[in-house]
Image (cartoon, rainbow, N blue to C red; front, side, top):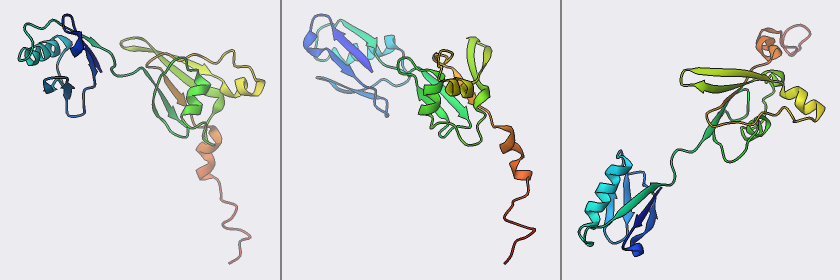
Length: 174
């Protein structure tokens, strides 16, 4: 979203959204293609478009909205994925938003990855099982943009495929 302000002709002030095809619709001049351009380039494109109906327009453009802050929740949750970070969100809230734990989740070893530099992440183990069992969320970490939560698989679910199925084999009748 772009906020477009005209210094001397405020009746043309507007907020526009870049459409999927890369165009914005401008009051008085129609559609203008802006995809892939920087804010200064868009400013020049819009100024050129308004030159047709305004004399030397003075335009200010503010980028109002862009890719929103997000967190990633992966592993043994109902709906792993990328989730928008709106306001304050904790580890347990992010897990709930991602559909909660699967039956195969290891609740006691949730890993929070946080970027500390462009090429380095810090990892922190969080015992969600203990927090929920004790009804004490004081250690429920607050998430920051770009954080990654990983819920690992528990040991039983790793070996379960190799265990005999009680419904098949000895003692079964047809």
